Image (cartoon, rainbow, N blue to C red):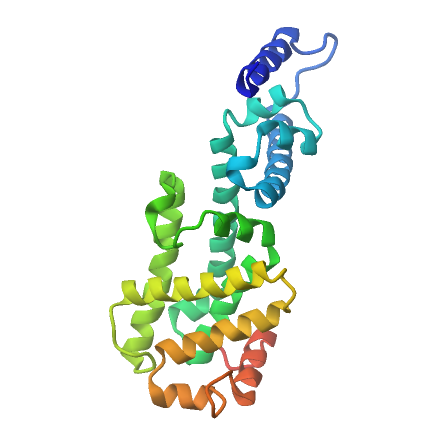
Length: 263
């Protein structure tokens, strides 16, 4: 019997049994809270399994087993493996975008220095590095992050468009200030995403051994070398261009600790 058919039979049997007699109906609020907790548990487990095995090699039975539930119960929450996979990505995409917007709203409205832009970049990168299973899911697909080859859902596409809009806004602001090399913001945003994707893929393939702060520092230096005007880059980098200089690192630390002047 197929995996899907087995799940449907279990689901039908569960519905047929109905609610136990003698119990009072749950309130809508309590039922909704339980369902939300259930879905959160399923998504967390699915994220780990998809990251370890990849989409193609993962079966719904694998996720049900790891989640400690029947296959039929899993199918009641997510009708297909594709729905579950997209559910994980949508949940994490939304959390990442919310984190960037919450922490960086003031910077996005009026950045006062390149360091403020680098600090905001660090917020985004920190989320990815702190959620390695989500990162591995993204990297396993094997396509450029700015490309629609993944055939995203409309909800994913909306979040992606919003996120790219934020990056393009940052590039326009930096170009207007004379900090960044003139160019087309959509193109620059895609190139930045490609650079970050490469660095993060290297980190994962190397067993995630490098400290997260080291990965962020490398990507920040990439940004300065690739997108900043020569005079600006010279003020931010070591003399050989290999890394951010000590003064820049100190200014970034002050922003992170809230001791630097606000943007």
